[in-house]
Image 1 (tube, rainbow over the protein chains, first blue to last red):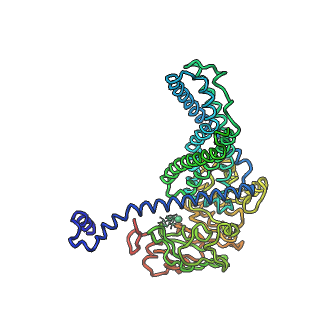
Image 2 (tube, rainbow over the protein chains, first blue to last red):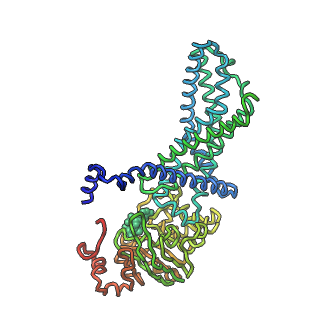
Image 3 (cartoon, chains in turn purple, yellow):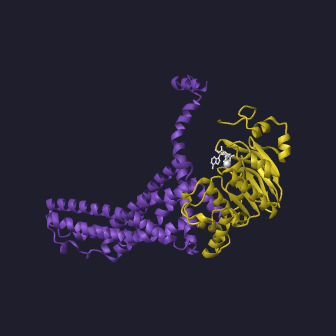
Length: 291
Length: 250
Ligand SMILES: Nc1ncnc2c1ncn2[C@@H]1O[C@H](COP(=O)(O)OP(=O)(O)OP(=O)(O)O)[C@@H](O)[C@H]1O
Ligand SMILES: [Mg+2]
């Protein structure tokens, strides 16, 4: 009954008297702004949720409300999960970028002596932290959301609350601390791998002597500082964002899948946004001309 | 020392589950909550410990409201009010022993070794001490249920909420659970039992609330329930598939 009415009103031309606007058309016109509004409200709610989870986690970190041994276990988990993954990704990216840069420079100037110098500087303040963090966002973020999400849908989080356990100190805090500590470690490791593979590529394919390629003279204290700050910020953001996605899971195993996807997307976006923010902040604090 | 529900309403989206539930559970009672699947029995008892919040209405435990509190304020309440979850819900990253020890360590701030000792004793009560070092995934569902009961009772709560404690147990274990609930009663423990197990209902219940369409349709002793000339109640306790009872979606 109602269906036939809908079809007719959609097909028939608007009512002849143009004075009264057709409510259905108005509704149709209002839809896009309403959808955008709903998305914005949803986004704002998520952002507020993440911010309050972050604040809660920090508060508990200050009060040292973590299980003994839990942080070490999570550190091992993170390292175990991502060491190989990070090494392969960063290694290959270094191979390809050195190859491409050398190829292009060969065409233009033919002087490859500064390639290592520039790439190493870039790696220290940008590539190593952000690419490592992107890898961690997918690898570790998905793991955190899946673990916590499945605990939510199987009511284990409710059972924790019944057992007098605060889910944030028990589930989020150890992962937060572990990720905070492991991200710089993994970024340094990734830097090492990338340096090795890049040097090898430059030597094998273009005959650049490693003693010329490996040149740290352009790396300033500011570069190192920015790189380290980025690592800590990314390391803090990934577990909080993906932990939030896990804690807000609803609706069975399908819900866990959705939470995992959301965690990867949101954690990666958080890393990208923070990267932009910190890069701009670093640029303003330490202008390159002064260096 | 009572539990009181006053005109409780709870919806999930468009689904109006509890629609004015009112009932009182007296101290020391074995109080059964029965009703068809999906009627809101688990939802009802989760309200008592702050795992769910009502849309409207009041819940009083010992005369104090226990709805709308901050999460932090529920922790002392959950020490006195234990809950055995319907699906046992053991922590799958902890061994059986550590599952039972966790509430002691957290609620009572016991040290690990002392908590484990106490947990061992609790496991012995449900004949599960041999499995102390196993992982929950390695147990059958009946064994998990017994561990879940042990975990809830470690804190010696004044009120215990059992969500289908005998479902999935063999008849012998089920009667042992019944006896345990009766024994708890002698220790002045009030038990609220959600159950479909007619044997339990008619052997250990002091009073029974039959939930239908979001309300306490009838509350009474087992005898009163048997004698009730309400066709819906009679259909439920005789387990007939045809009758006046409306079971939405089935
Ligand atoms: N967290 C939730 N989100 C959405 N709906 C829910 C939630 N919890 C329960 N419900 C709905 O509330 C209704 C009552 O659920 P409840 O688990 O209380 O049933 P029950 O009476 O315990 O049934 P059973 O005997 O099968 O355990 C169900 O229809 C269920 O779909
Ligand atoms: Mg239930």
